[in-house]
Amino acid sequence: MTPAGPAQSMNQEKPAPPPPTVAAPQAPLAPGADTPLKVEVHDLNVYFRANHAIRHVSLGVNPQTVLAVIGPSGCGKSTFIRALNRMHDLVPGARVEGKVFVDGKDLYARGIDPVLLRRRVGMVFQRPNPFPTMSIFENVAAGLTLNGMGGNHQEIVERVLRQAALWDEVKDRLKHAGTSLSGGQQQRLCIARALAVEPEVLLMDEPASALDPIATAKIEELIHELKEKYTIIIVTHSMQQAARVSDNTAFFYLGELIEIGPTAQIFTNPRERRTEDYVTGKFG
Amino acid sequence: MSFLNSSFTYRKIVDRGMAVVCAICFIAAFIPLVSVLWLVISKGAAGLSWAFFTELPRPVGEEGGGIGNALVGTLYMVGLACIIGLPLGVGAGVYLAEKGDGTIGNTVRFMAEVLSGVPSIVIGIVAYALVVIPMGHFSAWAGAVALAILMIPTLARATEELVRLVPGSLREASLALGVPNWKTSLRVIIRTAMGGIVTACLLAVARAAGETAPLLFTALNNQYWNINPSAPTASLTVAIFNYAISPYDDWHAKAWTASLVLLIVVGLLNIASRFLTRSRLKGAR
Image (cartoon, rainbow over all chains, first blue to last red; front, top):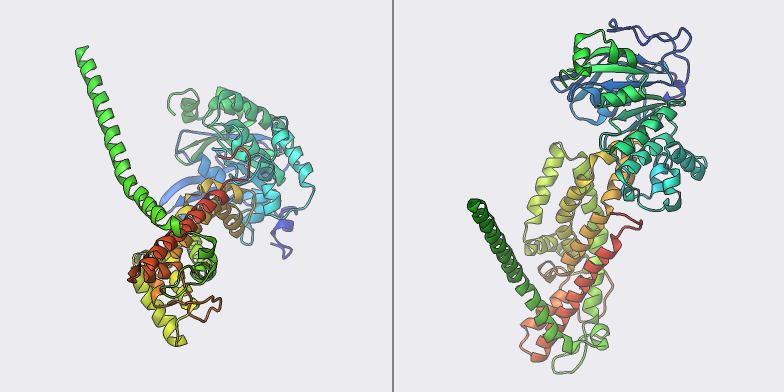
């Protein structure tokens, strides 16, 4: 840590390549020699009191790619991505061990402010959760106003609502309650809200699981577009969705990372038997 | 087939029967409510006049006069009680909801529960010992302190419940935007619960305005206008009490009319709570 504070120091070059504490199950997704990984996880363990929920997970995510995290219910997918923006900090009894690097900076190093970190690693949740006391506009601008961030809020709100493919549907009723929108619209509103604080990494925890097929298709289309600017890690129950939206797929089972690789390979030619059984529907 | 039919008929009968039972319960609960209103209005409405709201009470035997000083005294003391009680009650409730899972929180919660069950006359005696005796005389302060002590525990518990009702997903959403924890509590969680908290406050105020026992030996009474917090002060409830136990028919009528005024004050507070908690947003649910 430099004395300049976490926000600045997180933007600096990483001081030294992090020593992998255990051999990754698979080599981190073949990073090009000169493209550093956006997100790098080394031997991550999450405990809820005595329950060892995530076991020795190591993986890497290239910038501007989509990583899908799949696996049966209760395998730790959500627990895993919530560790990537330190959402476990507030859960009593939760403990995280290991290292998570974003742009070469360890999120769990001493002196990292989780508040500043979360502005760089945005999150979209399973159920749309717009703030009920706020209008559509206020919801999108919430991160900006609550964090006292400057800039032209009008402009930013319009831009991110366009990015989230919601602008045309809400431009005439920005002052209406955020909760007056349909479920699919609310979820895109939440995506817009997450984008407004300009994160670099976007975590999505089953963002379409509460939505109908049309709304789901819109969200998936959106992920394709967002990929050009953001690095996305998406948890999904739907293997079809993983196949459609992701470049790489990680298969979790019982808190362990079983296999990670290019999505096409995971679905057509997995190395592990358990992966094959899961993606072919033998268990799940 | 006949079996299906008979079970269908049976269900229909039970359904009707239950609906009737519920309707009877509703009416039984409604009768006292309506009769109280009817009695107070029918006996009290005759005495309502502008003078009743604006004039001082007159001595026995003299016609006219009002309870203006008691009305002002009630509003004044309840206002003082709010200044003391609302911040403490709401603050304690927010603390219990946000940080109250440890030993301190459990102790505070237990105390609040015990305190909210204490009869109001006991609280009046406590305020007498705490404020009246050291000051050496009855005062609006003492009355306000008694009312505030009455408001704090119920308000704390109500606020706690309301803040806990705010879905955890909103906290997560705010934290994920990089909003600090304290700001999330203040600007997202409490703001979301605010409608309910305002209602709880107004109900606590309405309850305090209707209390007699805590005022009897704290604020006592006063025949004249008073806004000096260190002086004894009249209140509607004590005025009703004094008028009602008097042997004069004229004063009995005044007690009914003062009761009606008190009902109106409390009713207005309830209506105000509905009005204040309506969402300003279009299409809000």
